[in-house]
Image (cartoon, rainbow, N blue to C red; front, side, top):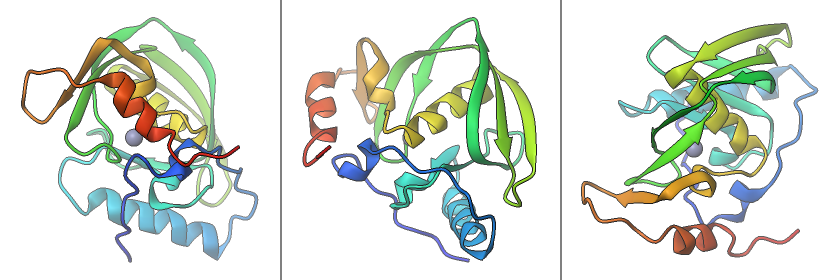
Length: 174
Ligand code: ZN
């Protein structure tokens, strides 16, 4: 049981592509456990991807109100519709932005033992899944802000999306 430190934006690891999990043993178990502990360490956390705790593996955990979901090597199979709404990220403390996402997704994934499954989701859960899978490909929610609608804390004042986006690319080497 270990809560891990969440990597804030500006760290180049958030822009890297995570590697697939091939070993479903003790090491993967430990990463999933740490992600779950970190997710539940504070009330209101909806999702967390392994790169956000400094591990470049394709693992995400989320609880969007319907219980814990652990996704190993998740892949989107099908999408439909669209939704526009507020989104936040644990690597961007205090920021909220308006982001357009697909309203429906169907994914395939594996559980922590490697067993494959498929899942369909709509609305908020579909949004969470897209946000978290993006993390595995080095994509961040600020890449999709609608009409520069990015806000900091409770202020109604917009912050400069380009400036924040630029900061996420600092120190990134290919
Ligand atoms: Zn995030």
